[in-house]
Image (cartoon, rainbow over all chains, first blue to last red; front, side, top):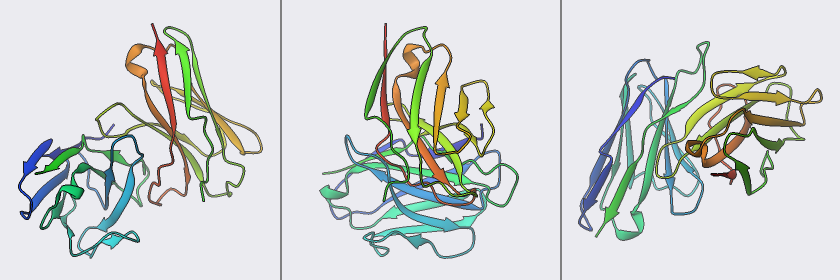
Length: 117
Length: 109
């Protein structure tokens, strides 16, 4: 399957600082990228959908000013957690898909474990 | 509203076939059945998907009933590395993936 690389794999930051997570599709052009959050022992929760060159669409209850998403190219999307607080500690996972093409499976990054102290 | 219903957990002996059921009685004509799995502390991994016909790849087989209201994912020879949470998802091709609770599959040595 296609490769989606997420960086960093884990990060620890101080409360009040911002953290940027990168998601790259390495061997295909991702027209659509998704960002998920997963708390311990829970399923993945979709945060937002981003299409290259346009603003992200956020799911209900997700603060767009806190979780900034940029999808500037067909191979890169970034999620910035601004003014992070301990309750933002979670496992963040990105997904990339080439919608509109023959194969439309979504492929996932390995996830980023964020700990805010 | 959940589009799929899966058992919360299942056990399977190593080397045996693991058959994971999924009910999707409200599936519409354009919706596909997708299966993903998530091994602990990793991102989900795509397994297989299908519309009407049964599908097989190097990882698994997908059996979809004729009325499309249910399906079964088959891992032909389960190994310990297949221990994971398996998600059955019903959606149109270009739709976002909404995860349910999935089935936690334990492979027993």
